[in-house]
Length: 608
Image (cartoon, rainbow, N blue to C red):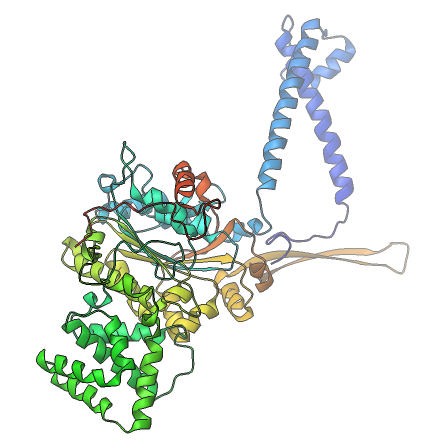
């Protein structure tokens, strides 16, 4: 991008003299008009309609300059100075709020070019999908769509209730404050949010409780926190095996464990990894059929002889072929069996954590804690936060499993609803998706979920992060399936930024070349001017790598790209509620380490 895209650097020539001439003419015109206006307002004599004639008539004595004209001159000058000063202040404020990329907006989508993402168009689509103000749980809930930001002219822009989102934001660019938190707060229906910290949770928890006039929560908030990311107490649990109803779902769950911390980009053994994943699926199915805890799956993996129990369960429930496959793996040669079972143990290692069991199963027969009912949670428009850290001890597979189970439950509800859509859309804000939600099949399901009213925001820190989880081709599928594609800056991957440069496009630049040549005689030199049009990239990779905070680059379906100004939560109407949430739920630095500073409020809504 040039220093100012679309602005041609012209040779200076005689522009200095021209500017001086126009300045003098402007001053003379201003004095003439001011003099004419003052004499006209003073009254008492006939004033010609031509302002330039008044100074001449005053000089010749044909007009008189009364005292009232002096008063009017002072008043008019005061008004002019006020207007000029106010305009200068406004311009300075406007320049102060501008960034170095804003000048490129003249070459991007403006006005009718991006009409389909404005409130009017998106709101009209929402009504056609049955999303109306009547279903809104709070005054600040958005029936229109998912907030994206404002155009540089201040027009709000939204994603519709059919649009799927892909965001690429590097660290410290404001994705939480201006993208995730507003989307969670304004969502009208159920929300599922993932993260590897507690920031989004603390900011939005109280907001999503939708407290009544007495300050009591009306909707339950669930926090799944096996790694104590937010020091949440396990007052409830979710059984991953409640999702498993047949061998297909068992295989889906096993796939998430296989993805684990390595993703699909890691080098896999062509024999032991598929075999280990299938073994894990067999044991998951057996435990689900027997109504056992998922931790029993890990117990059978480490005590191999207990695999015979699973064989019997599969036979009893009408899965003879799977029972035979599992029995065969129990009788393989020692080296072969060790490789398969060892691979499966590695995949399921997150189940061995001491704190994990209390989040995924009753502790004992006397455990009276409620179990999360995903169907009720979605129908009641409640909120589920799934927290996990990457690396050693990660429970990422369980978070991915809960995310998959919740969205598939929502899909089943949508299928049985009028129009095949959720009555009120569900928002899934998958922050840190590459670290927390390693779901290999997500790109394949993207466009389908959008048609069901299940709106997913996949938020990554870089393109390569997505490739590490999904693979290169699925990542491209995810990109092409996203109706809303946002770049938020601070990414330094040359190949990715070069592709983004091509997607942004080019502009036509009018250039003027001036050449002077000296003549051999008294005639002096010749001066010639030539003009030509060139096409240049609106941005280059270095511009995108240095993208300023407070701006995002939006690619929306069917529209040219455009620059948006981010709108942080403190500029939203629910800012006071967020501050109250932070005061109530953020860690108390004065309390002893590990102390619980806020207690969850339990309702009957999604308990069973």
